[in-house]
Image 1: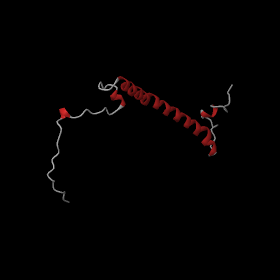
Image 2: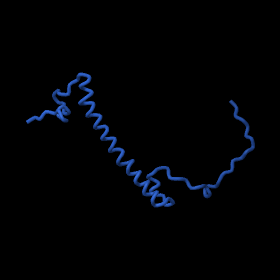
Image 3: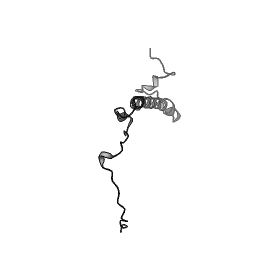
Image 4: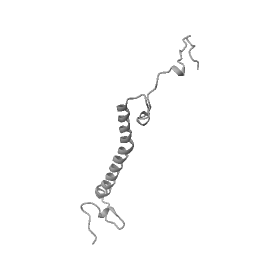
Length: 100
């Protein structure tokens, strides 16, 4: 396999000291970028908090509801009972029995 010959065009390279400033690659890094305005840094701080704290919380809530749904609804659709000994989810929820 052969490659085409160089056409004589040379790339003009900019020295590293004269390269244009690059934007931070993440919202967390932009919080510490002094070249950005204060309002932009506050917005990036709020978005970093939402991504790192709020999103995992919502994910955990959805996983919990999915497990409850699977245990109480889907298992009954397949005919597998949840009122077997050792089942903790059988006594939870609105239809749960009180053991007094």
